[in-house]
Image 1 (tube, helix red, strand yellow):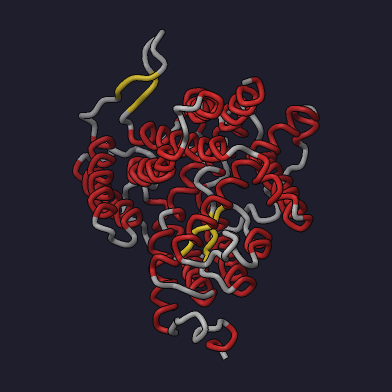
Image 2 (cartoon, one colour; image 1 turned 45 degrees about the vertical axis):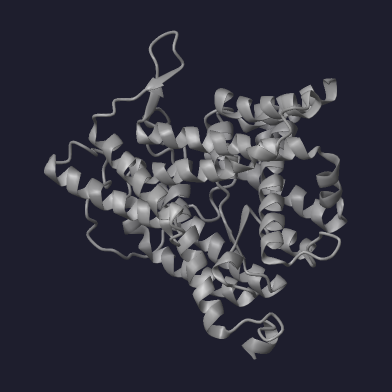
Length: 408
């Protein structure tokens, strides 16, 4: 029955291969279980502590949403795409909406819901694909690169490698002799070594190894290296019931009343663009590598992929997965991870920082395809990717690039 439903024979797939592909995909993506709560709860940013949702509740929501929607993706499309929180979108929600616009995190979640509804309408009407064709390719790539630089900068700050400078200096080099920085550098070197050798799950392995080192260092220093409660200490148990304390209670749709119609509309639009380009770029890029694109360069059943998509799409095609059965396996692993909240809470910010830095690098690689030699497209693209990290705002980058392109 499984073989017939998922068309294993037609795709040249086997049951064992799909299970292995699904497990490999989970290993590659599992870092999001630790990184997404760290970003949204502002771990490693003392000045913003308490402004985000609780870490444990965010970890549970991350696993639940990734698990349910990845299974839905596999069943609805029969493609091995897996869904998880977007590394561009979560940074935008945390640092643009909460830290920048001073929205409570509940209202920021409301913005995400509204942009999700807007994207669903655009997909159902076919307008989303038309929008993709209307925006210059250079700006599409620049948005992805800019988000990557933004995430990389967040990672460097979480690691303590960079810090706010003295008066007159926006940013400067951190104290490289501290234990947290040493842990982050160790994790970064290990992660890069694993990634360079194509080892699956390199990001996750780097996080776990850095956390283990942080626990040892914290014990040797008597808790002085990582003084935050619960971080870098062995938990009383490795498993626990998931924390759903914010389920149904973490939503506030008052963004228009809080910001005014124009600012709220622009904010929702900018978040939608971040979501928009993240998904389309990833889906089309991976589908091309796997040979799933049709003769016209389009992905069959693309609208189904876009309809199920919520935050970001990641595929396991490179791991050998060829059908939606692999997505069902990956989603099941995320649901099992719901019960690992005590382990996730142990991870200190310097242990997740290497993953942010490497993910930022991966997102910036498409910079080579931006035609900087052409002033008409190159300068707006440069303005887009530079303004995001320099102003700590994805919206500012998108707006600056669009205005510059129209003016030129």
